[in-house]
Length: 133
Image 1: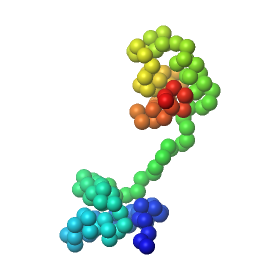
Image 2: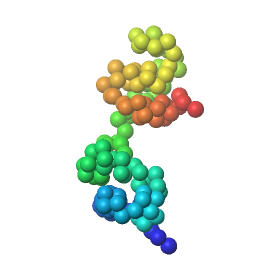
Image 3: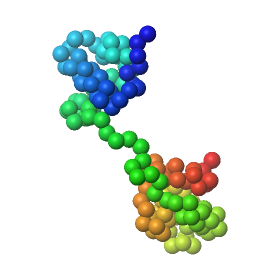
Image 4: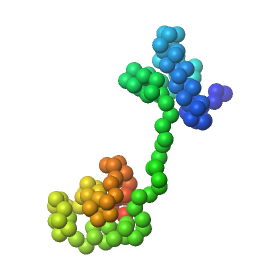
């Protein structure tokens, strides 16, 4: 049974990415053959090859993943935001929205606490506040 190459240390994953690029650059076979050889999905090989073509070797380097520095909004702040969203409309808080949206909550948090969230993170915050199904 072949070991799953998607798991393992960052260094091991990076080595596999370099092997994939070397295989494809030297035209030793197709992307499908490469995926079978290195235990990756065809989609995974295609992504590696695309990143290499776009950014060169830098595109293959391992990056830090996940939230850096943990949560940025504490429990007290989250409770205040939740209460404001339930009791007031964005217009009452001088926000440029008619109804509460992820963007409106994101703007409220930025204006109140100076904490900025990326769009995908704001969806998670919205969900954690109990405002998203």
